[in-house]
Image 1 (tube, helix red, strand yellow):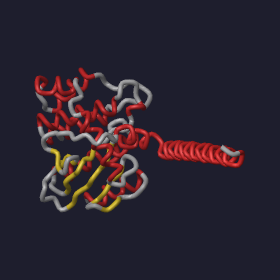
Image 2 (cartoon, rainbow, N blue to C red):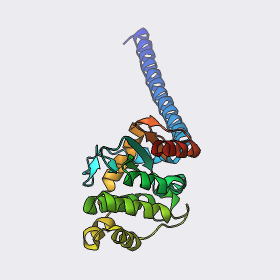
Image 3 (cartoon, rainbow, N blue to C red):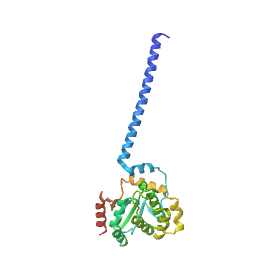
Image 4 (cartoon, helix red, strand yellow):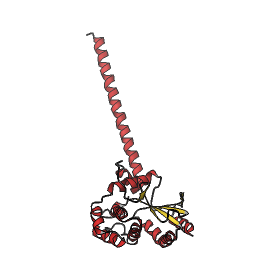
Length: 245
């Protein structure tokens, strides 16, 4: 091989090596940018987004008996002229405040046939307790609905908010949830195993993911006849009170 040919071959190998190095550098930069973007999204989104990403499994789940449209728990007369939709987490302190502000009036309006309430339970606050109370409470409420119907569910729902644990503390253990379920009208033999085994765990994850799909970014979020009822607790309280007058 001539010196000229050898020089051309060396140049070709050098060019190929340089191209391969540049390709690897581009891939590395893309990976670094992607990692930074994900980090920014997580920081901006906060706890809800972190939970949503972790739970986005896409697995199918059988909802509790009595659920409407896969995730809604309807309480009240279906012919009521007004429907109020509430997204809530049993560990959410602002949800408990909303319940404290309007719960009694809302119950009276339900009994009077003025409104039907579509409860949309979600769980993204397990990190706020030491024993995953948010999802455990939601599972227990789903079990009560599944075994004992909407009236028992509503009674249990109200009890959970009335006795909501402080953030950073452990919530009630399973035996206490089971006792409250029995007080609400459930049969212990029908609910114990399902509460202890967290039988609706996947449905809980899917319901929480669906909240994000619905464009809802936090709890409590309230809609009156499909219309958003404001971005603050006072606005939500006022909207509910106006709806039930």
